[in-house]
Length: 286
Length: 236
Image (tube, rainbow over all chains, first blue to last red; front, side):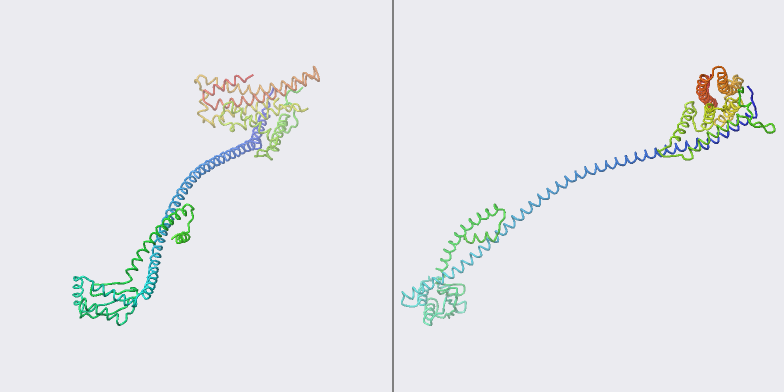
């Protein structure tokens, strides 16, 4: 057992050199490598963790968005449904109103047509009656129709009561002793003379008579003095005929109106209606 | 029979003798450094690691864990010193299976050098950590009366470190030599195997004791007592 102090010193130096060398070649590289690896793994783990958190957040956000979308989808559907209902109601109301308007217009039109028809019918019937009457008169009377009319007029004039005569006379005096006689057709001179004579006899001999034609009268005579009028004409018969015809037409229209209502009901039931068709059918009914 | 490689002088120049101790120490150093360099030159920081690097990582990690277990707060501070003690002694002892090799740890000069290194390292680490006053205060704890005993303890444990390692390694060599002359072939091989185990255990004991001394000098009084207990337990 001996100690060589030189060797001890050398070994101390050797040991310190070894410490330095191993620190340089072993401990530092190894620990650094391990530390870096750990850091990298840690980094990757944290990255994975953050990625996972991010993914979870995103998933949560997407879930929320989906729920919102579903909610809003329901809302939108409800709103659309309500809107559609409102639109349908509005359209129905509009269509109903339009139908009502059309129906009213059609009724108006129908009434106008009926009036026009009645007027033309009246004229034609009047003319027909006149012709018939004239023929009858000319066939069975010994004077012409105008003379009979004049005679009838003169008779009527003479048959006026005293009060009316007086009023007419005073009216003629106010009006400058003029009277206007309207006839359906031109009168002969003798006929005019008879009327003038009748007026002079009945009212006043100072009255001047002015003869005018009025096609609308058809047949007859109308004396107008101021505000007073005395008339005998076929118009009265014609008006009676018109009244009767109007009653007949009204009755027919009434029956046609019923038919029209039924047709309208049918149209509503059918869902689709054409106003023109309805009108035509009703016209045929009328 | 030479019981110490110190007596084996390979070269002498003007009174400076190059003994086998120094030469074998250099051999061990070269083995350690070249081996480490060969692995760490191609070090990998990825998950794919070579098996040699894994071996070195395991060794370094284990040494660091042992230092940590003794109670040092920052194992990296003590890793080069303690780790080198262990690796050097272990390698020097394990190489005894190489024929013609004389372990440098079988020389009292080497063990004394290592013990002196520990003797110097303990106050250096302690002062670096707690300051000079803090280190000196450890000598008068628990009471100033303990000052002489602490100084004696410091000297005796250094001596014990040196003698323990020297005795174990040298005795192994000597016993093998004696057994070869008495019962050749079989028993020396067993004793060689036992010597490998003893050599590794001695390396562990030396390194751990060094760490315990350093830790006890660097830590608080309570921990220092714990460290002293550990020392008692580890002493053979």
